[in-house]
Length: 155
Image (cartoon, rainbow, N blue to C red; front, side, top):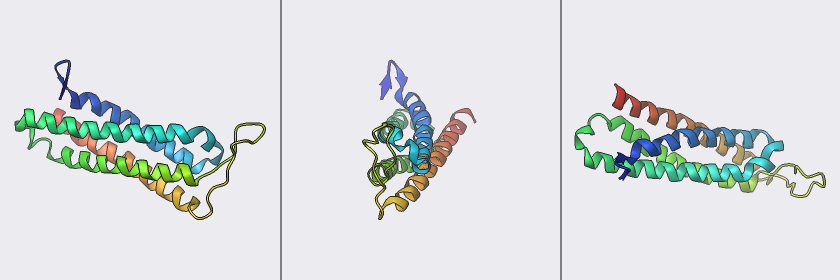
């Protein structure tokens, strides 16, 4: 996969490197600051989905790059493993965020209070825990995959 003669993988990876930590930080804010949930709910869902899509595209582009340049295989072995884990974690993060968006309520920004909702009493605390663990995992794996990729390229 190429874009304008350049391999697509290094281009798409930058989207994952930006969106992944942003999605993780937004998830943590959503989980721990109920007053912000009215504002963060849909941007968090969008960031989680965009992160998953870009990580899927990065893995596909990386596989394509490796097919075009098989001599890179020994250099990028660790990077491939971390990238696969990141892909799985980003998909799991979408599920955790979907549960959090459904289960966690909060106050409304409107003076009338319209749109405020209570957290689900059964799933509220587990959703906070799940979003927190998934956000931490996502952030760590973005770092590990990016670090191993940069070490493979730059030494």
